[in-house]
Length: 567
Image 1: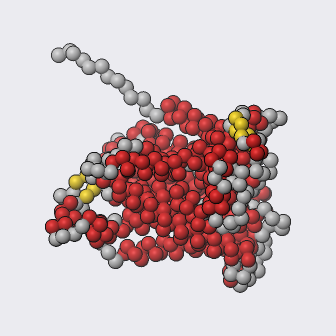
Image 2: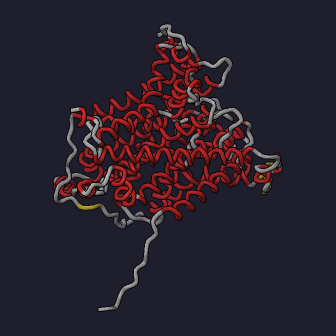
Image 3: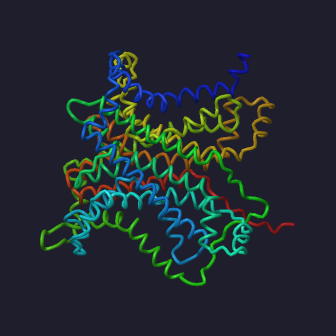
């Protein structure tokens, strides 16, 4: 019995489970424990005042943060899901000029940090922003910096989650269902409303869930908007609680509890909606959806697509570019300049140090995360570990938990006095940033590697084991070579995400250890828009060049084989 429990697969499973608990589950549990026992992590075992949980409805800042988060989350979920679902439906059915640009924009929005998108909108719509300087639009400021305007901006940034969920569900179709409805007199709108939409309910729910979780946990937008418009949300108020004097751990714990509670309630609603219905409508008559040329309206779709692309990508990215190369001359307008780029490196500017620190943190997170994610995927794919479903769930938790909450948990866990005696007091050191980045990267790495590892026949490993190959040798000679391309992709994805992780780095960065997103955000808070835009483009360019270089160096090269004419 003991031998079976600690066989290779189970030993690996227990080790992986322990690492995931340490990186993800324990910090999250620490946030909840802090509410019940506020001083437990600092030597005080007194029971907490649970009435603090109700103070969120009494204290003006707490209540306003909760209300704003709910408003922003619900409003963005509704509009982003409708927009993403509608675009996915049109894109899957019709082919029109520029359609592939929409797909590219969707992925660009997903991989771009939200604070960069939000800063672009602030540069465009500020009282002296590009909209007023270049276009003379005075109304843009008052239209954007309102709750409705922020919901619109967030919807334009988050709709790709709903778009991808619905578009993936529309990959296959069963025409006979719609044909039967049309034979009975159903119009296209009626067919979609009564047949297609109900069958796509799981996809819409999944897309809406992703939009909601990413919106309520978003730290980038409120951090950027705070420079010109007061709109506190739970993530930003949690951050503020840690950077006030004295530090308000009680406030951070209570607000984190409500943030986690909101996400848990949203997930419960999704499970309730889907659990009593069946959506398995695909059969042998299912065919792959192919967009077709519309009989009319092709250029109208193309024009609408151009307008959408200008809104979702043109304004945020274009504003960063224009702000970085222009200088305001007051009433005389603006002129072109490269001064903002020169200031990045003057007098030992912070950009170089912040960029180097971010690259170091991201490289460490990618390597450690790749190691952890590899063994997580191995356990999920090849082992018979009894708790591998638990491993799967924990590996996805950090995708749902906001970075600010995870950062709070890391403070509680790694700021213990007894850890200093054994050399593991990581709070205030760069190592804690690597661990937090690993926790955030594990879901991405695991999903990439699990999909690739599923293609490796288990028989290869069994045959090697029968020939006497040990566990490590089987991995090194079979699994790793077959997954080389996936390992590179997963590692580079984790690297890129860690470089621009504003939420955890803003909470955990050590004194005098600036990172790239912190440098950009602090310049933005000081209203140095030109400097922030130049730092964003310069840092982003270096990161993209680094990723492309390593992809070229590490990914397997295609070998061209000459055709032999020998008989």
